Image (cartoon, rainbow, N blue to C red; front, side, top):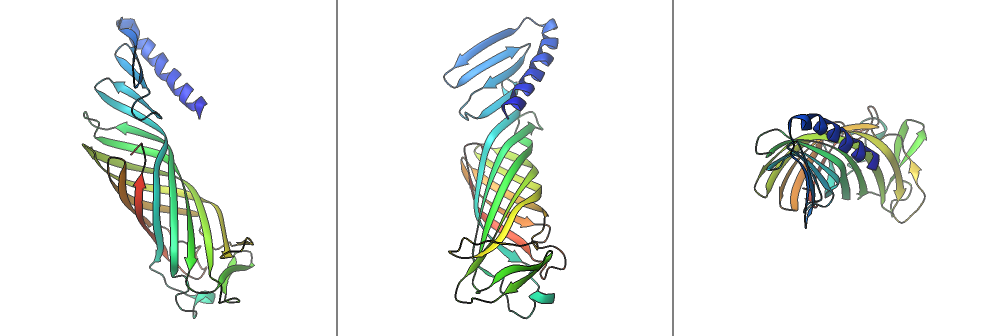
Length: 259
């Protein structure tokens, strides 16, 4: 990550030196919040109230920003549009969770100002998300053969869960009015890990029914460092012909120093 930041700084420096042929305005100034390098009217601001943020552009309005980490998402998820078929039919709504906690973390976010006031931005980032689904029914998902997962009701007194984690790239637009910010994103995400296990057990059942790729949309409204979000899975939770084509609906809180 440091190499990427250094390369970006050098690229901007070389561009600025080209402009410097027509200008003698080259200087470095420091404040209690950080340091500003001015080369031919182009400012590189390093360090700010957001300590992890680099800003590039005009002194009065930043055109480009980079956030190393944040914001963070804490929410709850549930299956919607659930309809059972095949081996998964005839067992009731066993996928109905008693709890489904979701956590997400955004990192390496690039923001590009699209208007003169820098209120309207294009945002591109990386995001890691994991979710734990705890079920009301006593069952566990198991692979009987690779690619063929079924619910097994072998120990109905113990609740089970399944876990998923995804890494992806959300792309979206945001608009700021003072301390209020509204952002909308669409993401492409790839599965890192998934398993099913009984609650309290460390024995994990690897399951192949989880969709390897998913896309989702989310809407976020924040004030200062805290806000709320809602997200919807455009692609089904499970692979085609697994037994259910349910999608996900997630909602919760978002917070961080780089909202």
